[in-house]
Structures are given as C-alpha cells and as structure tokens.
Length: 213
Image 1 (cartoon, rainbow, N blue to C red):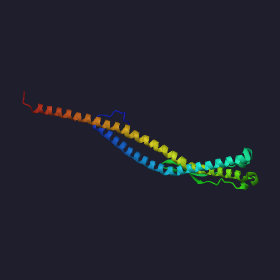
Image 2 (image 1 turned 180 degrees about the horizontal axis):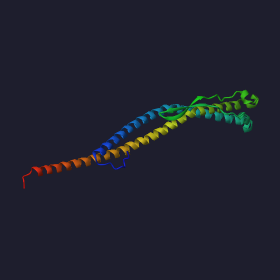
Image 3 (image 1 turned 90 degrees about the vertical axis):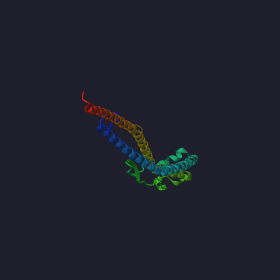
C-alpha cells in the first residue's frame, strides 16, 4: 500500500490501512531478524578473512625481502628466466549461497610451487637466493588465491547488511510512522462522525417525543 495514497475516511479504509500497517510491521520484524543473522554471519566470516590478510602481509614481506636479495646477486636480467615457462593456474570453483547471497568456494587448487625440473633452469644459474625468491612468490600467489573467496564472501555479506539496514530504516522511520498517522487520522474522523451522528440522533428523538405544537 502506497502511504501517499488518500485513504477513504470509512471503516473499510481504516481496516485496510490497519492491515497494511500489520504487514509492514511483520516485514520489518523479518528484516530485522535477517539483518541480525547476516551480522552474525559477517562476524563468522571476518575472523578467517583477517587471518588470511595477516598471512598475506607476512608472505608479502618475506617474498619482497627474498626478491631484493636475489636482485642483488643476479640482477633483473638474471632473474628473468625464473618466470618461464609461463603457466595458467587452474582453480576449480563452485557456487554457494549464504542467506540468498551468491558466493564462491574453492574446490581444488593445485600447488603452484615448482620443482627444479619444472623450472627448466639449471640450479647453478638460480642460486639459493633466486630459488628462495621464486618459492616465496609462488607461495604468495597460492595465498592470494585461497584468500579470494573469503574476501568476496565478507564483501558481499557486508553489502547485504548495509542494504538490509537501509530497508529496515525505511520501514521503521518512514513507512510505519506514515501508516500509523493515517490510521490515527481516519480513526479520529470516524470518531468525529460518530459523535455528530449521536448528536443528530438525540435531536431527532427529542423532536419526536416533545409536546405537540
């Protein structure tokens, strides 16, 4: 029911507005419960996401330190062969849902750390610093892939919490008060009409029972 519509000042209009107010109140209660459930889910998702970010920061620092050490020994030209042969990491994903919110989950992610044979580069050319830098960046890439679904989950649940909060605020602060005002206004008008009808009825009765002219 549009709260801006003119409600007829009749008992039927009053009952219709009361029913609309009841539906909105039930909808607001369901929305409130949904928001509470989403907030609880957000907190459950936040801890793993925070831990994943911490691991990423630590792995990023270690990888950067290893790269600086390798560059000091081999230079950028000497490290270029470590990127070959190129490859595409194949990650198997599946769709999931949290309170109707679509999210993704990793089913299988192959290890990205390569053996010396897979690098197709002589160990003597790599050196310890080059091998360490390559391994640490491969591990960093694995952590980035693993953290992706958790970040997506937390972001989408957070967006849903914000949208649900806005919807609840609209119901509680705009729609429900407007409907309550309409119910009260129609009730006042009906009461006023009833009082006027009673006054007219008393006058009619006095006129009928009064002394003959």
